[in-house]
Image (cartoon, rainbow, N blue to C red; front, side, top):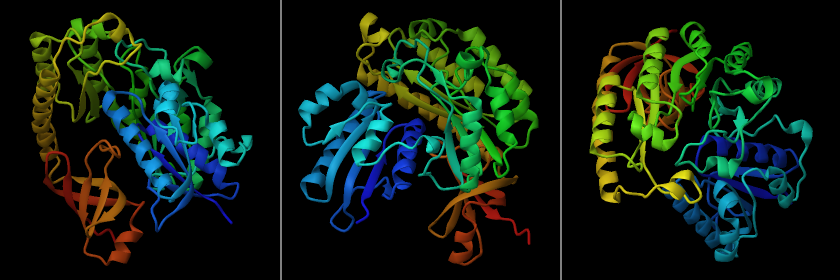
Length: 441
């Protein structure tokens, strides 16, 4: 009888890529693979694989809750075996093994081969560039490296994932070509740090050459760049964003802060002046670019003045997209070993709320500026009778969406999923847009 394996992924898109690699290997060897569901009485599985996140406290708590839910499903007879891997398992397997012995086996973040073997399969080398996509089939993440060489004070990723290791350019092109044959039209480049892609292999940043090669792949129509570190950013990438129709004028560049004092405490390798110069250059060289950033509040050393400086910077810069999180002390990091977590939880939450309230007004104003425009939208799904998609200015999972009204049958709407449609924007909210399908027939 064919075995069923459920793979649930927590955390970032880089974890999702790992899950998809495992899924492809075992699916090709006769297993039925389901993504992101919990086995129940009506939907039992032989094996449940949980890919965990251990980046910050909230993510760790979510992963632990998911492990207990998996164990409960096992105790109720809905699943036979539970395997756990990923960042949380990598960092705390010695504790988890004692605390949750009902889990059949824990694996590290990079132990994909061992996970495949535990399922009862084996790793097939010639399939290493292939994945079973768990996102809607028309878009996929392309992880271009593993690990990180940065020494940010607050971050445990280098401790968990190890040093920066780029995937070869040829291997990434091969993977992207395979994804295109599976119907993928949008590639989202991810890594802990996409900025220094290729430096370890080729002695220089190869991000721009990689993007250029990806634009040549038939079927790939959009290429989007995430997680660009703001130090030594390869500005030649901006030329591609400005002039190549396949490269979305969209850049995710986590800045974390603007105060030079706080940036120094964070060990980010930059300061306020250089950050502002970089943002100005990006805006100048890529007119209409959408910038997405991530900011942290409550890091040791962030006093009232530094936080006010951050608010002022956000108000001036007007990032089209912005996410934020509060500092949480992570053991063994530089910050945990050298700083006192001096900002109270209450103040951290107040600062977070103030920052996001400011950003909501900026986001709303930006979306309002798009009312009346005609935009090309990639349709992701049908929801409550509306087409739901994204333009070149929205990335999946982290940004808002475009809701599209279409005077068509449900069947006709479903046929549009995964296609590009011309839409006129009629209404804007803080994060989402509403529009109408333009009949091009």
